[in-house]
Length: 589
Ligand code: PEP
Ligand code: MG
Image (spheres, rainbow, N blue to C red):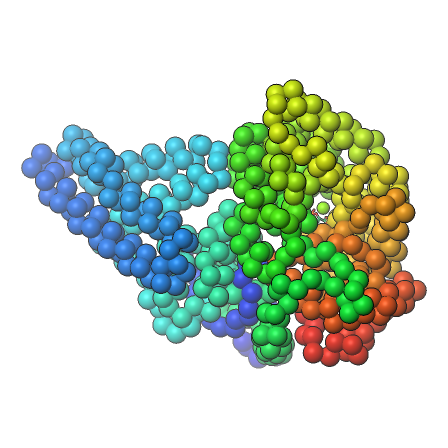
């Protein structure tokens, strides 16, 4: 083993695929140090000079931001550049700047100190608003404050870099993403995802591969490290071996060739050659993803994870706040349907309230929290019902494990409807109610549960975890997490049959649904709806449209006879080679 190989171990991290594409290159670790601010007392006669210094720094910041704005407008358009415009407006706000100048005069303190305090005050107020949007604006205010302070200290943030780079950062503000993209940026990888989704949004507009929500990638990487970033599957590899790079390079080649042929599938239905239709919809976590979802030709949203409303806050959003959000989403997706899931908190998910539990995955999760906290559930149900007036919103309950839970949850829906009715508030009385089947007990009783609801949606992530008793976040056992394990496949078949017997449709919204390799199996098993990560929509549609339902049924029947996950995988690969030789098989999905 060479010395280099000894030092640089290959590390693979999995995050959220935010912008498709694959990049191979050197890492640039973007660390934006918050400037240090000292408090200095001024003599009376020093204040005019200090105010002049402040004026220069503001002017410089304004010019910088204008430059970034022009660049952003050219690259990503006016609408998406509004965030930067807002920062310039703050700089041009006479009241705020006037207040800073007044304080320098009256308190006789240095400009850095007053700027830090005065703008910091606004940022803190925004943070206290417990509103996701305001939190993002607080971030922007902080960014602006640091820009002025850096300009007062005349320190330049390095933004011109040599060569091509993959930017690795804890988080990226819109201005950071723009400035950095003036270099030859091959990709972005960030620790944070979700709330700081500007990086994801911008990188999609800039068509640069990005993976967000990687947890602690910025602690694993140093500038100069060799990296592969795969925006299709959300994988990044630090110090990849030559073989690994070749694998990704050929995957990219296959994907590009393949993608160029996918464009015309966008507006076509997900229908087999013998006219068997499957509803193909998308999983969504953030409203920012909606444009992309529509662009990818989705037939709606099969799972809207409302937990994103809870990120970075320590209370639950009010009914009004939720209503505004759900209404916006339903309007954007209309005439297609959006399935809104009630808060699925607990387990690995964020929550303003958490319980100390030794075994959280078997604990206070999903509907259990909702039923224990009816005030929260009712707020959410009323908000969802109010947003249902276009008749394209359905409600779904997570982590159902017994029929009694379904009955109780439905009682709350009735109660919420009665309350709205008594207040003459409009809603769709025929709003579809469904449940996730992701706990083995619910899977076994699927037929009885189906009798109580309008649809079932299989949560294959949790179902696999609970069926096989494998925590896939645990590296000691994660290789045992196999979605095509015969036990899982047999259970999926059982759920589909149970639903159909009761006349309700059955979908699947776990990650398995978005794995193109499994598409023939799921369609062949008779699934009615696939809800997938948006980036794979066209690929899955192509697979469905390229074959006959008869063939899918055949492979599904054969797979159900096999005894191991390995045998099922091998069987699928053989099927792909034979029937879809032109479809690149994504090994990293
Ligand atoms: C699932 O468990 O498959 C699912 C879709 O729910 P989540 O991943 O949000 O737990
Ligand atoms: Mg789940």
